[in-house]
Image 1 (spheres, rainbow, N blue to C red):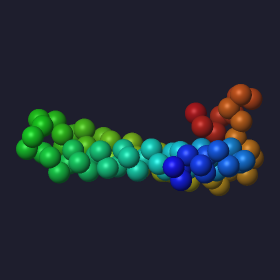
Image 2 (image 1 turned 90 degrees about the vertical axis):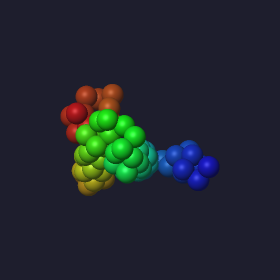
Image 3 (image 1 turned 90 degrees about the horizontal axis):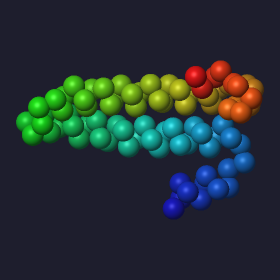
Length: 83
């Protein structure tokens, strides 16, 4: 509820996008760690867990870059920041 209410109140697009990226990477990280700890149950869980954790880290780097960009992010104007 806190996350949803913050997204409704947030007026800055970059702040909303950064919070969404951090939340998604948090859940990807939990899934990756869960796959790494259950190596004996699944055949390729180690490889998939590493790939998911790498994706979560890259998303955090993306959030860091978006947060420190001076110009506003506007997807409809063809911004190349998020590509």
